[in-house]
Image (cartoon, rainbow, N blue to C red; front, side):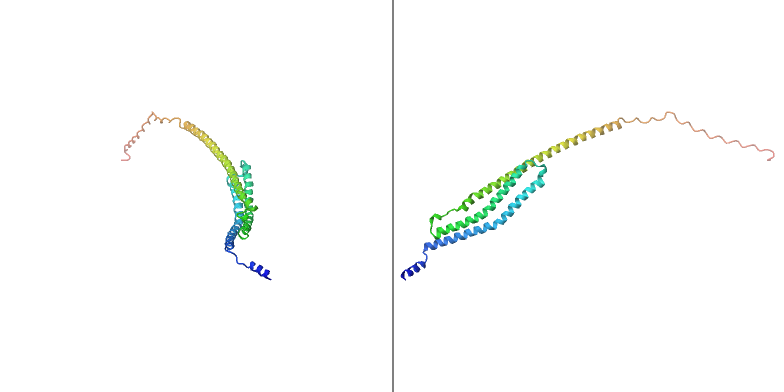
Length: 229
């Protein structure tokens, strides 16, 4: 009976100050980890949408408006960038559930350290935490490599397109100049033929017109006869 009383007394002993302090630290740590886990879950859908639409829109813009595939050069660069964008996207998406698992493991380790007083669990990293340490940098490096291949594709094709436009403009300018010279030559020749010399003025006639004949004198009136008398 006394043993039962002693056992119940030991079970209901109030926690000491050190236990309360550790419990308070654990609660604060647990709250912080839960906040981070919720933030990761909230960013998951947004990241899928942003990366998918961003990579797709970027590629379509380059191919549709700047460099059509039918006339593009170094297609392997844009294809490589697509693969790297996809790998980066998958790595970033995989990091979210791994980060959630790492947070849960950290909570368990904190419980062992603060509550059970196991010093071996102080700032211990689980398997998920170790994977997460190299997964995020790897995803970033792959993403920047994909951007580099995309820039190389655009640079090569825009540079070739610019050179082609300049050469076409020079050819068109030379052709226009030759046509202009030929047209001017033909016009000059025509002007020389038409306006070879100014014709001399017409000379006046040397013979003068004969004077007009004088009017005839009136006939004399007849003399009166005896009969008319």
